[in-house]
Length: 261
Ligand code: PGA
Image (cartoon, rainbow, N blue to C red):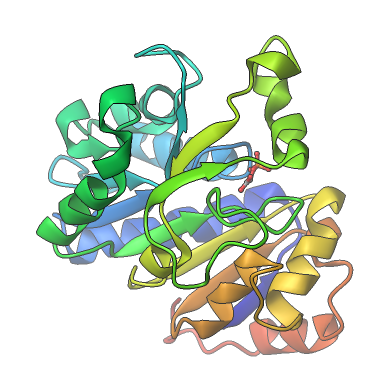
């Protein structure tokens, strides 16, 4: 695991956008795993500004998979994650909507939605790079504390904390769905490269538990310790409770230019 303490959101965005661009340059038909929430937005803005300036790669052949989706919102709801990712990133990158996938929250197919989503991911050969945020309660995607470390895509119930954290996207807490479909922790571990971003003081405890605590279902994000290729990008506030912070800084300062991420 490579833990990279950076100075600001914009430094994180530059590194994360560079990782994604490198994957797409290497493989124009790359499969990108996308996250929603506030954390990846600076990265998405950076990708879009490079794309608009015509310095980024073409995304025309890329396929995308979202980590999760709310259950119970009206089809096409502006806060659905499929609508959100199209609005924040993929439309403007020129990725057609039929190449952007999310778990299907239709009420009549929830029992099979997980396995259908897994089959779609498998059919394209898996995810090349997966962007991840972290919940203030340590969740990864919407795998809340207590989630099996081997879990697959399925319906989950959000914790009260997560619904409170996400209420800012809705007009009231009551409107935040109680249920979601989410890639499982076992599903996420199959992506070839995980890029976990954490920013802000509210993520400091969860970040320390995920990166330096025991691997435990009590902190689902700690499952990244089991993956062979993980990059953790942190701002100063999110990194502030790491015991080995000085060491991570030293490693990053001495990182050989040839190494990449
Ligand atoms: P945030 O959410 O990026 O909006 O903080 C992250 C998450 O819940 O995983």
